[in-house]
Image (tube, helix red, strand yellow):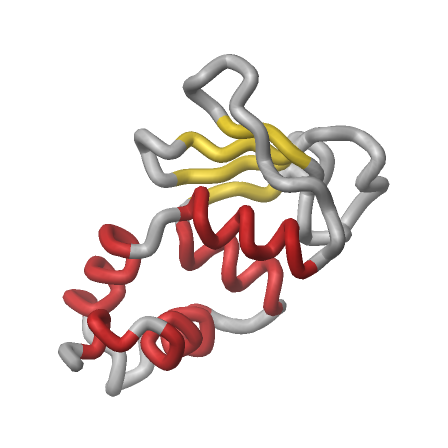
Amino acid sequence: MDQYISRDLIAKVKDEVKVIYYADLLCGACDLASLESPEGIRWIGHCPLRLHDVRMRTFTVGPEANTWYCSGCRHGGDIIALAKAYLRVNDEYAVAQFLVSIPFLRGA
């Protein structure tokens, strides 16, 4: 990890930034329909990663565990993994994106 990004800060991003909100934001940015929760537990929608055919609703988010998984591209994980996959960047840059856009994470 980069010397400027501590493990505590990474843990804070994972705890404070909710996958469901970030995923829904990405779906909007990709002109995809918002995520829906037909079963009330997991949210389902089209994958914003654009690594496969997006006609199928293969992207799921588990808000209780703050995780995501796409059965189409077989990627999944936490909030940092989603940012890395979408932005195609490393861990440090993915965490930095949240620090820039969410002031309370950096102690402001």
